Image (tube, rainbow, N blue to C red; front, side):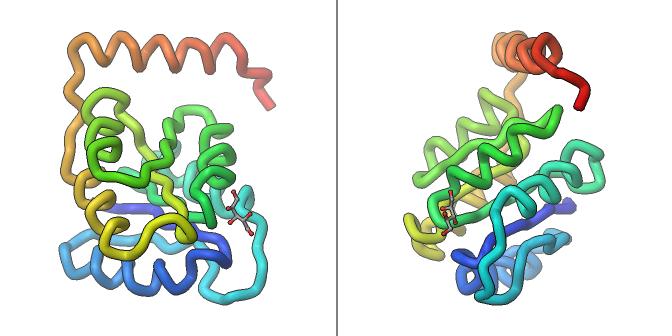
Length: 151
Ligand code: RB5
C-alpha cells in the first residue's frame, strides 16, 4: 500500500520515527514533507499530500502539522479529499469505517509517537463499511460538486 506522508516543521522529529516504523510494516511511503526545522507553510504540504491521494498515486495519506488542523483544512480543499484530525484511535478507526476518510491528520504538538502509531494502525488497516455510510459519504461529495468553482 502506498501512503503519501506530509509534515511541516513542527513534525520533523515525529516523522523521523513514524516513516521507518511504517516501512518496517511493508508500507511504501511517499515523503512530501519537510525534513528540516526551517519553517514551512502547512498549506503547501497539505496540497501535495492531497493531490497524490486524489490522483490515486497514493492509496491513503497522512498529514501532520502542530495541531493537525491547518493541514487538514488545506487537504480538504482538494476535490475528492476527506481529511480528518484525530487524537485517539476510536475516531481514527471510524473515520475509515463510516466516513471513508482518505487522509489522516494529527498534531505533532498534541500527541506523542506511540499514540500516532495507534492512529496510523487503525487508519491504514480499517476498510470502509459502505452500505448506509456510502449514501452519506456520497451526500458529502455532492456538496463539494455543488459548490465547486472549478478553480
Ligand atoms: C506552525 O507553527 C503551526 O501553526 C502549524 O503547524 C499548525 O499547527 C497549524 O494549524
